[in-house]
Image (tube, rainbow over all chains, first blue to last red; front, side, top):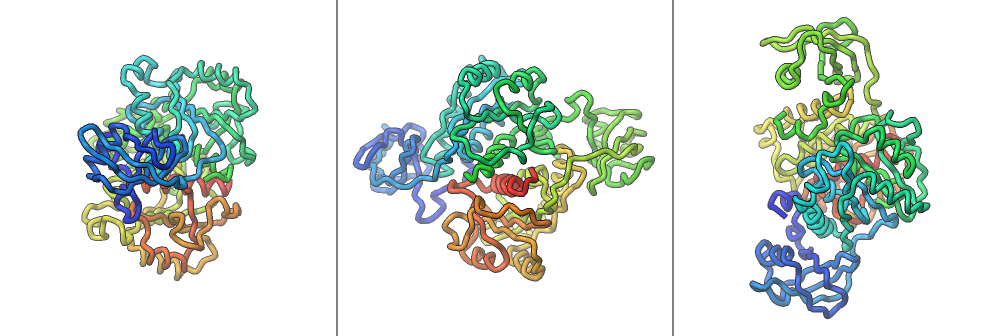
Length: 266
Length: 266
């Protein structure tokens, strides 16, 4: 992550008594000696300047959270000795996949960061008709790798021990076809502008029963096309959020907060 | 506003059929000929390059929204002829005052922008013990003027015809004393970290009855001090939001979304 990203966070190490927290994907049980990934080792050695013997916390990205102690630091990275398991931040009981149209510039970075903090299980980046990016340009820009790093960084800062899966970007039609093929009882909610469809439900009128899983579809700055709203109506329930025009880069945090509030999961 | 700010918005003028929208504080009724404030005139003339005869929308910041037509543009600004009243975005039935500790750098700008978009009635910037700013430095930096401009800009973009009041920044103790002096039946909710007080209620357990007014207290990056939590307990109900650590600059948007969801006001 660049300096601009880390600046957004309150450093955990500023709080006395709270140990710095690192992503250690290989940590499985007490006693393990595991190497940190290069980015994490850099953070430990160069930024926080921790030495052998320093107490830290590690999480494996799959729900495991542990005390740990720095065992060795050097040019080849950092190793920690895994200690006792600890309670991580509680995961939501509803596994939400956020299918989000890729936004302009670096706004998708902020959406990934916020969605991970709000507790999504997975993020499906989408290219829609009005997205100002293409699948090949996302691949060339290695954006998927970047979003995965941001997901780790966000989990690290918000206290989640689970790193949500960032799926490979897909076109909207591919996502719609997958949703149609699944034909699961799980709800799929497509957020649309008021007036874009006669059949939409206000989020205030959704019933509050928690599903086990849900998919949330959010469009790009320019909105969905009429064809996309039409296609979406076959695979999702269409929902409107507010009478006001919400900025595209705030749609995910607002939608996830509203849904988790209704489901008693905040 | 600088270019960085306007870039965050979807330009309304990109949407065919949607007319550009301006803040015209003097617009009161059909037939009025009113001058736009200098910032708004600049936007109309220099950015959107509108000429006499162009149809626009105006809002007066006090709930009035109108069709209008550009009557004259020139070195001395822009005048519009006010037409028929139009429906603006619906205002929330709960008048929320957001009492927000001023955050570092320009993060308070984003909080003001988001809080206006989410529908607050007023914003009370606060300096708390762990704020990294002082009241004199806020005055020297003319931050209050800046936040008022941002409030206008946000109302303009989200479709509100009401511009929330930005109150003069105050110290936390002054705000707490005002709340104590009011002794109103309206709820005051102080958002604190889980574990900061034994008496806090989870937001999931707040009852969903809408008050007419509410005050929401949100702390700075470093959190409230124990003394502030204690002082706050005398004038507010203390509420926790999530088991995860939410970034300080997202607390307002998350809290407002959650409360408006519970009150059926989203």
